[in-house]
Image 1 (cartoon, rainbow, N blue to C red):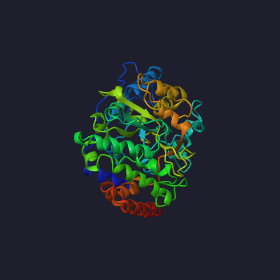
Image 2 (cartoon, rainbow, N blue to C red):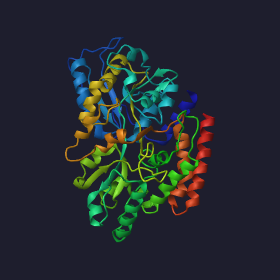
Image 3 (tube, helix red, strand yellow):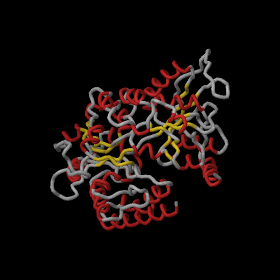
Image 4 (tube, rainbow, N blue to C red):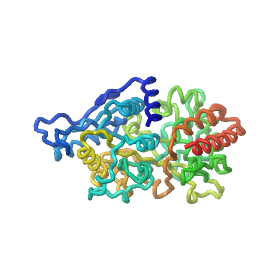
Length: 447
């Protein structure tokens, strides 16, 4: 705990604090009820503060929370806070401030919060809840929020990745649009053609934000048969021949894509929505941003391309992969309203809540097989690629270890940065894979 609090204090020193109940966006739901009579086990009226970081999900979550409040009599206030401020808020609360009652947990930070007893142990609540059976959820998400046999969050959702392309740009430059049969080599050829044809207008065929690993280069590594983190969480195979083959394809595509300095300055989403980029990969959590954007009629989604690792011209099992991740709904160990907090979590996470979430287009469900409605939540835009990847491809859980951010940040800066910036140097990318192998192995050994 001392080590954790030292880290918290460092964060507090370098970032402005977001007050509990406020934060970036300032969007809220719920409100005080004059006749609220709900109480905690220790007495006193309950009123829950909830923290999230994605404004796109607010409306749907508000609808679910309002229905729960109407039954429970407990008002709920949902605060949308920017990503950086969100973690500062939780960190400051952990060091002696006030944490939200209910909030999202992420794979990057869950272990740290669980090990330091900052999250409410949900074991007894789950065992007594007929609406929650953890065996029904994606196992990777369940395991992520379990520490030493205890469950500290209930799976909230899951996400997948798809290829997003601008049909108008493909038409403009006379390039055939992506299909579900495309390989990464097909992506390279199309990106090359558009980048060359659009050079006078600074239009690129592809853009990759290399700092966004889950919706980007991680998928290449797995398509070609390697793993960022092995299934036992004790190693990596990124330095293997398969890992280098995946990263070689990344390098190849980067040579005909928007340069990384351009991506860093503008962002892949902005490039795409400004008609300066024809293709990107994105996660299902971002659909609404493109669905509501100007020019969205030209935006199309295709299955993630596959890596033809054996060169036989067909997609074999394991060659089309998509990372998936899942948030967890957690409660602060210090909440004065643990019963109400868990009851709200259950409402978000039980099958009815998960179905409602998918129907409203909030996110895909954390329970397999009930996200079909998500594909129908965006009339006029076919987003079925996010669902179909589960039947027509392979999902792998976003790589994590006890201290994910230690090696994740280090391989980005110390191993791959030079290769990202100099994609024409094939040897540099291969060497970067070797460096990443050493960095991850050392970080895991130190855990």
